[in-house]
Image 1 (cartoon, rainbow, N blue to C red):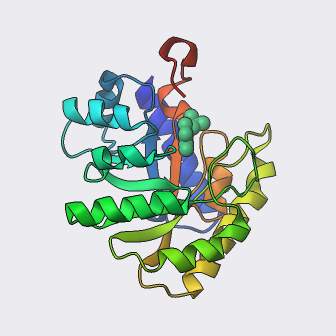
Image 2: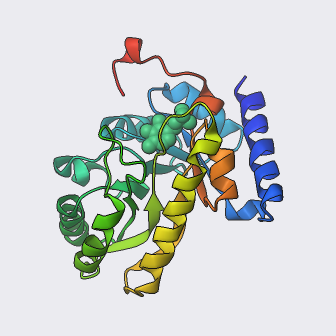
Image 3: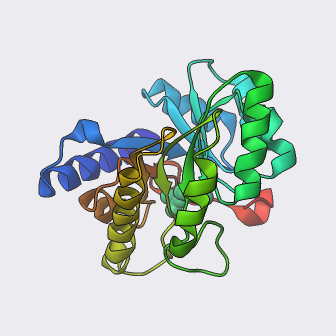
Length: 234
Ligand SMILES: *Cc1c(COP(=O)(O)O)cnc(C)c1O
C-alpha cells in the first residue's frame, strides 16, 4: 500500500510541476509520519524516503532512536520552549517558529550547543483561531527583531492552509505566503534567506506546488488516515 501511495504522490507532484513549468527538483517531499509506528517509517525508508515530518518532540526522540541515522527529521508542529533542547541537534529544520519568544529560546539553545538552527517562520495566512503562527501584519516587526539572531538561519516561511473541500479555495493563501516571503527577502537581513516555502498537505499540495511551494508536507496520502482516537495524539 505504501509503495502505491508514494508512487501516486510522486506522480501528482510531477504533474503539478509540469503544469506550472517548474522542475521536479525544486519541490521536496516531506513524509509526515506523526502518530504512525516506527515500522511504517522504516517501510517508507526502505522505499527510498529520507525526509520525515513529525509534530511531537517525544515522537522524534523515540523514532530517531530506533530508526536509521541518515533520516532527516523535520519538526512541523507547535514547539514548546522547554522542549527545544531535546531536538535542536536532532532535526534538520524547524518549520514552526510561531512567536518571538520561541525564536529567542531557540537562539539561546543553539548558542549553548554551538549550532546554527535552521528554521521557518510559521504564518497563519488563513487567520484561523485554532492555528499557531504569525499574522501577516506581525511579520515586519518579528523580522526586524529576529535579524539580530546569530544562531538561527531563517530559511523561509511555512503555512498550514485551512481544511477545505476544494483545494482551489486555498490558492490565494499559498500565493499570499509566497508574496510575504518575497517581501521579507527584500529586506536582505543577513540571517534570512527565504529560499523555502513549506506549504501544501494531502488535500492541497498540488495547488501549493503550482503556487511555488518548495516543500510539501504529506501525511495521509502516504501513510493513510491517522487514528487519533486510538493514539490520543494530535
Ligand atoms: C499533520 C500535518 C501535515 C500532514 O497532513 P496530511 O493532511 O495528513 O497530509 C502537514 N503539516 C502539518 C503542520 C501537520 O501537522
